[in-house]
Image 1: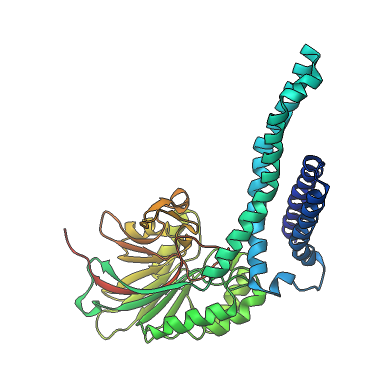
Image 2 (image 1 turned 30 degrees about the horizontal axis):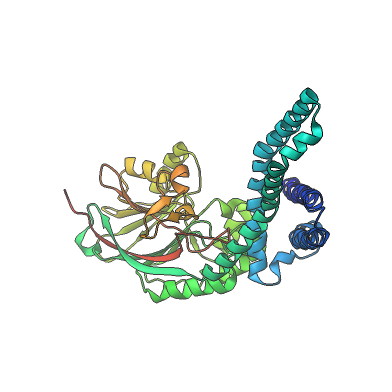
Length: 412
């Protein structure tokens, strides 16, 4: 609860700081244009009220979060604003304050040295005008950028790539050639990825009629009030050889023990450092799932526990791990195939007109970001870019449902 109050207080202070700075600039820089000043200050007040209403609503006991009501666009606007205003205030602190201090003392020093304050003001009138224009642009930029991003988020929120992909697996037994796995990840069931979207994802996943369905973590966004939606929708996933889940970091945010108990109480196959043997009639499959961790050494111990949980001769081992970095430990331990998520493919990816990536933040954060990877020994990793969202804007990496078709790896 204390973390929640700190977060809400920080949000309120950031917004209040932006409002006070912006209102001061409007009053001072538009003093000669009273009508424009009054209109822009009113627009500023309306904007900050839209942002403040849900934040204040969150702090009122027994009051439903107002973001849970109303149009999805409002939710997107709020989330995008929280992200932008944070960086805006950091930028102001890094750039705005030192520049203002420098300008103040430079102006004062020149005026004192020459005793010509009036003349200096006249000579610098064009410079002051440019500074005013820049400050007004700084006031307008965040709302305009966020408004445009919100329109983009609303326009693209239902986009869902559904495709089948051949996945090379070293040493794949002949009888498992063309085995299909529908891979889902990062559903983030909650306010951003609502029930309607999840029901569509579940229906599309079932329509692929794969042998297995794997869900690699972050099934819930964080709020346990959405657990009924999770249990009822994910519980509708069907596959002949089973539906298997592993744990993601968002699933653990609020109360991981309650989350685990609820999921297992609904008889969903959650693999928490555990494994299950699937009898295919010939070569058995060993599906392993591990807990989420950022630490490589934990991945080794978690995989070892899952390995020891069950056994079958000559089984093809498949690891489900939310964090793709678990692949390094899996490869060392000789596991042929790892399925992961977590990265969202970078979430906000800049591309040129030909579709080539210009910048992907995921490359700065993860060793494996999206798609297929191979270890030097030939083990395979597939990183899913996510079927849902915790943040209401994707760019360059739309949500996806992937049917993976296992094929023998080509020996080079």
